[in-house]
Length: 492
Image (cartoon, rainbow, N blue to C red):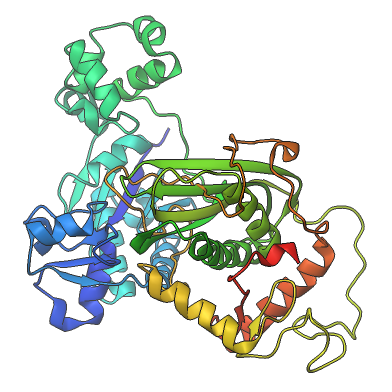
């Protein structure tokens, strides 16, 4: 039976390296990718890391550590473009490639020696191919018999390194491996393990599997397996997405609910459009709020049916916001959709030729639900007027750390904020009168009733389809969905 080999390919300081490659004036200089001083570092060049700058570090702290740090905004489209090239290149070696993030992937190299020679040769070939397709970006490769060890191995000789962990060396490697390097072992776990005198993975094996199960349940069993070099997970070329979200850090903390709603609309548009592109729909809408003191909360509500409608996502996020009493000024807000189900239910009538996607029945200047055109703002319920819509968009862009058109790609890869850098979404409030917290998965009856008619999902789907078609044809910035935010427009 062929020796099992899993490779982990990890790009070196990916975002920062892309910026240095595209702008030669940045090469050899400390560079951080991120938002304003209010945000966090998304990536740091190796020149910046010498000063202690690292990802997830607050940008203000990074600038104190390295006053001459060059901060550049992230360009997720560019990173995604190069990421696709990398993944396609890896599939030239094996059909079993599992993207783990935009800049890392697993590759099952089992049995490929006849094609590419020993695993060391294949590792070098992978590195050379990635360098070629990216135009000069380096990666680090680790190869091991199991998945988690391959990931650890790719970090051993960074940057631009290659490390092979042979089966006969696994036990010794684990004996001296700091237990915190095992995926899933966090700060709290480290404190508990320290009390047991467990500092290295080898120390875990001083206690039986049953001991760890009694002490920490399934997490204890997982720890014992990893310390023994056991990881049954396969390389999975595709896994269903679990959620889609967007979040933004403000340039200044705010308690202005109109500002929060403007951001929720922009984020709902991003999330909804992404879901529709993937033909996904979700039942659970989640709102995230991070306060000025970095405390983070989230509130969720599950709908009867899955949705990918921008307006439905926005309305539910606003209801969660309405039900929340703000404990402090807000530095970050976000919205997400999860609990995916079929995007369409029941029989569907095919679109008639007269109702082409991107066209509105009645032609140019048709009723209130139609788009104005390639450059006009479009209201979720009706046209709010060109000046008002554009002003709302400018206001949102000016007040945020990132413009409304640059929000990242998803919760996992949007800008994270604060030292804890959590990923889940959260919420805040708009209506007068008493405010009541909404617990996670709160039933619809528990949410304060709003004076709005029942949502017309079919109408919303048609509007979304029209706007998506216009953006596909004219670009993402061609159409802006606007609302008047000087009053509660949902109570009309």
